[in-house]
Length: 106
Image (cartoon, rainbow, N blue to C red; front, side):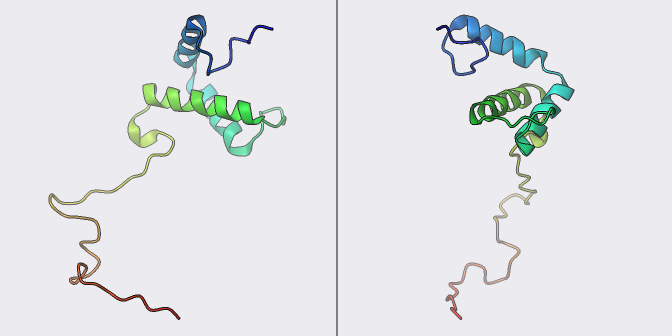
């Protein structure tokens, strides 16, 4: 039995071109619909996504975002804020931030 072309982990060169075409033809609405399906675990018609469908949708969403969205709009983006040059995380906690502090168990 031949594998359908929609499998995203196929090593077939023809498939790779189809995946490229798929990602390049996704619209912002389709991207949003795929994200929503992943979030709620259902297609718009109410049918549950299989584990394989979730994985395929995630791969498509991530690839789409890598190509078309700025970093701060991508899934998983963490805004680390900004620090002055030379400043390290925890610098503003207290003047003795580098001092050892014993843990107190209650």
